[in-house]
Image (tube, rainbow, N blue to C red; front, side):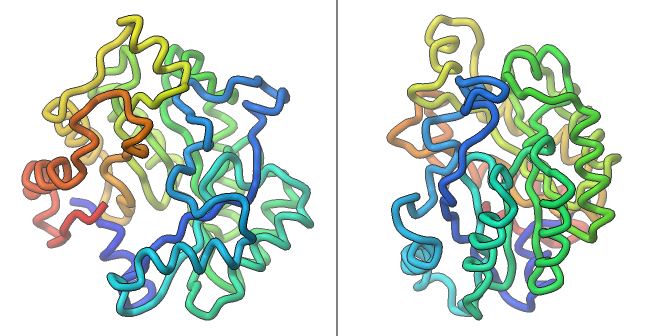
Amino acid sequence: MYRRVNQYYREKYGCKVYKLAIDGGFTCPNRDGTLDTRGCVFCSGDGSGAFAAGVGPGVRQQLEQAKALVRDKNRDGKYIAYFQAYTNTYAPVERLRQLYTQAMEPEDIVGLAIGTRPDCLQPEIVALLEELNRVKPISVELGLQTIHESSIAYIRRGYENSVYLDGVNRLKDAGLEVVTHVILGLPGETAQMCAETTRFAVAAGTDGLKFHLLHVLKGTDLEKDYLAGQFPCLTLEEYGDYLKHCLREVPADVTVHRITGDGAKRDLVAPAWSGDKKRVLNYLNRLLAPLEAEHGNKASD
C-alpha cells in the first residue's frame, strides 16, 4: 500500500543511504521572540536535534563524526546530510548558501535534507534551494504536525494551515522534494483526526511523510502538562492503531520515511515503552505487514 524510505533510496541512488544529522547553529521564530520565546510545547532544548553531532564543530567535522558512528553498517558509503535541529532556513540566504554548500561538497554526500517551517521559506531561500537542487537532490522537511485548530493552538505552532499549503506549492514548483512531519497522539486527537492530517498532507502534494509518536521530554512545557495529569500518552497498541489509520491514507507514490519518532533516552519522560526501539519496531512491523505486502517492504526506522 505504501513505499518505505529504504526502497525509495535504493531506487533513487542504487544503494542503501544513511542520514547524517548535523546542527547548523540555527534558532527558530518560536524561540527568538519573533512569534514566541518558549518554542513548541513538545520541543526540547536541542530543537529536536538530539542525534546531531553538535553545533560546536563545523559542518565538515560534524559529518565526519556522524559517519564514524555508522561506517561499519554502511558498506556502500553513501549519505544524506540532514540539517535537523531548529529551523534550518531561518537565516540570511548567504549564510544558508555557505552551510548547504559545505555539506554538499563531499563526494559521498548524495543529497541534503533540510528541516524547517513553512513560514520560513522566503522567495530568495526557495530560489537558493532550487539552484542547489540542480547540483545534488534536496528534500525539505516541513513540520505540519496537525491540521486541527485546537491542537495547533496548544502546541504553539504559530502558522495557519494555508501557510503550509503555500509552502508545499512553492517548493514543488521549484522542483524540490517535500517531506511532511505528523505527530500522532496529541492531547484530544483521535486516530481519525490524525488520519485527516495525513490526508491533508497527501492532498497538498507532499512526496513523503514522517510519523512521530507524541513523547514527553524533560524540560518541555509538555512535561509540565503531562505530570499535572492533563493528558495520557498512547500505549504501543493504541499508537499502532493510530498509525494504521494514517497509513491507509498514503498512496503508493508517497514515501513513508518514518513510522515512529524517538527522543534521547536520557530525556524521555513518557511513554516508557518508546525507549525500547527494537521492541517497538518489531511490533509495528508485524502489525503493518498486511499493509506493506503489496510492495514487499520491511520497516527500518
